[in-house]
Image (cartoon, rainbow, N blue to C red; front, side, top):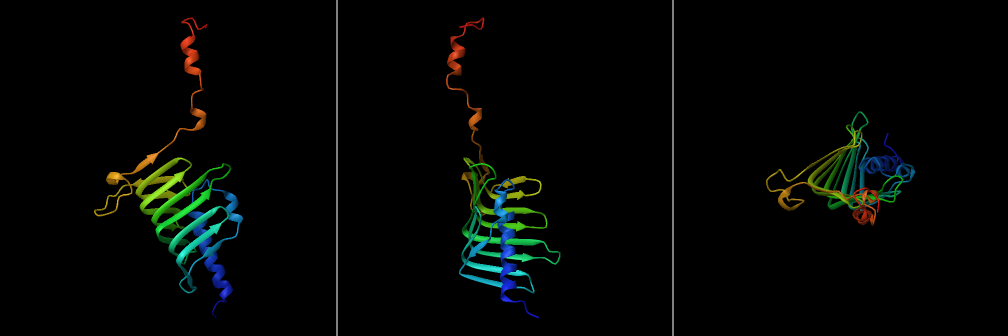
Length: 198
């Protein structure tokens, strides 16, 4: 017996929700998980028998502070219930607020993949992730959401378009505000005598 259009829409939304929730860092705003998922696209096709949903044309997925954009996105479920998703775009983008701080995580790549069986997010081709003023660039970024293990690679493949000059991984880490020296501490030390008194 065929499923109703409402059941198909709910299945498509559940798959997209999983993609949005799992494609972003573990320290993202947890309140987003309780928010409704909204997806806009030029076209949506769901094949319930194969458990595959396709979204095509200016795909925009939002849930709370999460915003993901792509040219097209595919979400499917394996026989064991694990979810997998692929998003392609020129570029694919995501943005989400981090939990408990006024800080955002922004990412860009030409292709993003999520594997629900191993809880891994992968960004391919000109991948870039910003958190506050820190950033990581590479041709490939992989993030394990269970272990919080991050891996980055340059353009190892011949002919790949480099994400950075020279095709290498690039990381920028800014100093944190509380590590900066006090304004006049060096001047005070210079005025002290060898005995420690001014």
